[in-house]
Image 1 (tube, rainbow, N blue to C red):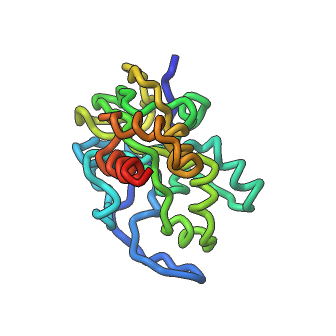
Image 2 (image 1 turned 90 degrees about the vertical axis):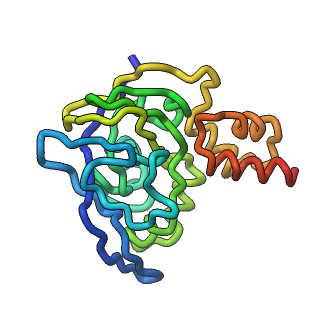
Length: 219
């Protein structure tokens, strides 16, 4: 079974000002676990969830941000952060090995309550995480570790209960994991063979495929 357990569904209805020693920004990063029985997943995300920076977040390809709570202990041990649901601005806080970046593949589909979703891209950790924890280098730690989380696109909208799982429906034949994509992006940027595979992976978002295509042209 490749089903993934969900600890919580997290949203926030409005933006707020986050301030750190090095930067400040208006953001909808600090999402909170819903207390209702469930919530509607729309084409571009959960009903009532705010997206402040629409240039880099939101839309169908980034309808749901996921992060695995299994990683929280690592960051506590290494950096001293006590983390809980929504710690990385994720809509779904997951748990278990099946939800690890190594075992989640671009283009795989899952049933989520009444909805159907598809793995679309790794989450590209940005400066907002550094502001949230007053540690500018935190995004770099996430990038180099590959433990970035990932996005799901909505294939079919529907109601989702907070007790639902991500129920595995189908595997993409290429079997390219989120961790594989992260490794090429952050550690293996000259690997032409792998970059060509990613450029031709249609289920990977256009944004990421274009990024890799530019690297291919330069190589």
